[in-house]
Length: 158
Image: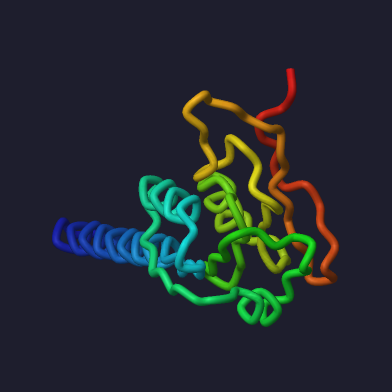
């Protein structure tokens, strides 16, 4: 083998590596685009959006008088509803779901509709209190059947 041949092989290998790295970066950036549907008067939704932005998500916000049509079109059972609904890469994110749970969802890509934190538990992202109060809560994985399973546990009681 000639030196020129080896240099060409190394150059092509490096070029392919750079191209694949760029494609992976582009894919991860697009996977961080979050559309959030909220009502006009919800301050805790704005705090959750700030939490998601600080974790590297790009957010687009749509303000609606009611979120029922968004939720029902995605198959979200009414008993799992919270104050805002996010859509990201084919999944819904309902309520005060921590960013790390969304990151894990996107990495693992389970066969599911999305994640939900029903109600508005104290200490969840966007529901922090000045006193630092925290309630235990679960992030639920919502399966296509509408059934749920625990995806993550937060603020366990001591």
